Length: 212
Image (cartoon, rainbow, N blue to C red; front, side):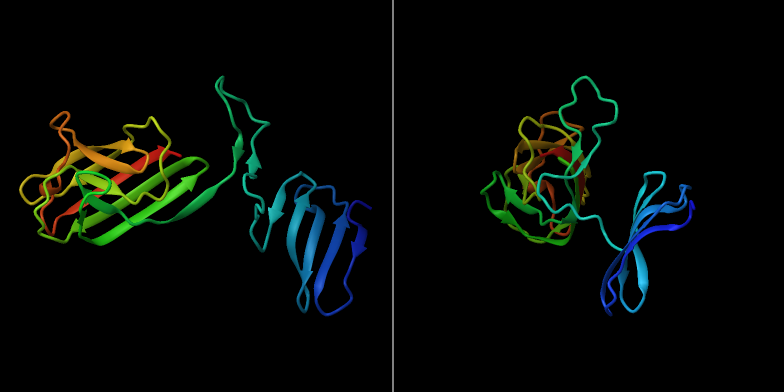
């Protein structure tokens, strides 16, 4: 019948796996199911009669680097070059603030809260930190320590707010190169934020999205 068990493989021991294949005719039922045994069978994975795949108790693990989920069956824009979603990652990163250039003097910071999310080849970073020194620094404020270096040719792609004691500065983020970022004032064209524009005890808030 349409609801009868079509096939069954069972481990008769006290642990292991059971495999059941059924012929249910409705999308609400499974056409293929894997059950695990741990003192009783529990349903782990099914393929429905409607073709939907359901992972019920674990994660779908992509075990080979560069592999992922293909969207090749969908419509394409004229310039399409890839339809494989091959990465997802989220975590924290540590901004390193330098004076003038990528190897300049490091500014001390505290209250660091910085996170990132990477989907495919696109990274979004969010960060805030507070200056924690009174060093006499005067060069461009350079942010390094990005979780991923950006692809070349990207100049803009984010915003920052320098919450200064005397005058706040709204900024665009300019990439500089693949591993560092500068802050450029919105109010004053071509004016980069300097390390001495951020007073001791004052914070910066920023977010940026870029391609890797």
